[in-house]
Image 1 (tube, rainbow, N blue to C red):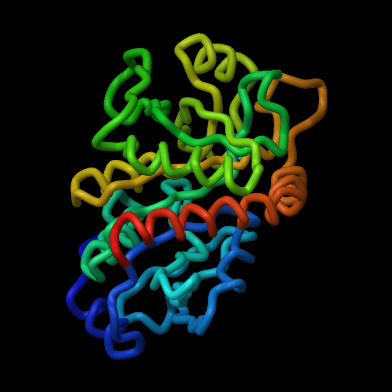
Image 2 (cartoon, rainbow, N blue to C red):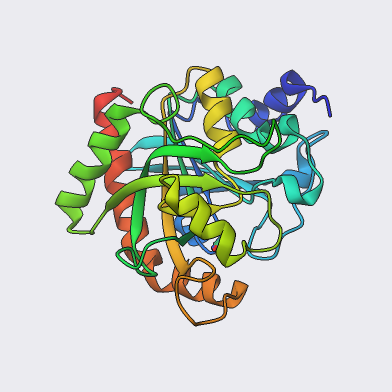
Amino acid sequence: MRYNLSEMTDYINDHHPGEPGIAIVLGSGLGDFADGLDDASTIAYRDIPGYPKPTVEGHAGQLVFGRLDEIPLVCAKGRFHFYEGHDFNTVTLPIQLFAHLGVRALIITNAAGSTSRKLPPGTLMAIHGHMDGTFRHGIGDPQPVTGAPFHSPQLLALAHQAAGITKVELAEGVYCWTLGPGYETPEEIKYFSSLGADAVGMSTVPELQAAADLDIPALGISCLTNFAAGISDQPLTHDEVIETADRVKVQFADLLREMVRLAGAELNL
Ligand code: HPA
């Protein structure tokens, strides 16, 4: 799909003059973070001219503008996935819009499955590398891609600093992107894990790729909501994903807030 980004940006600027310096994409079950912003105001995706509508449960469709400690930011509640039938341009539309709005740092959150017993459900994991486990471009073994330009070393350092200040434990690892919408099989998880994946999920990598293309420093942070298929005997359900995200959302929000403060200071926002 092609989109008229100027028209969308004009609409948003008419309703929210002023540049949000930081953008946060809120993943499944993590949308509450946006409720804690000062002077919060919301634009529904359906009101933005030409903007597509997300369809997944647990994902509202809104941009929330507001401030934290005077730092202007925008949160996307609700994202687009390939498994909804969207193309790359649609999946990354919020990121393209952020670039048009002048965003200078991006934090992408998600819910993901853990491929390691050492990272139990409830763990927060900064993404320092990713793998493309979609096989969209061939059947070669996916390889971990770490560091810049996809995973900002500055934002990663700042995430650890924020974790220290808030006393929230933060792991670090490689996120493997799978197409979904079904969860993986135990064999797939064994395979991705053997290639270096610590987490698996159905989002974030296209958004990180778009941010890199657009020169926006970005960092992904996963909430590991469940053991991936075959790692434990428990069956894997969307309910568990939502329940775990709900259990750690307060710590996750603390971490994000502190990251915004630190990034805001660093960027002079
Ligand atoms: N696999 C893929 N995506 C996910 C998972 C998982 O185990 N948990 C949350 N999102």
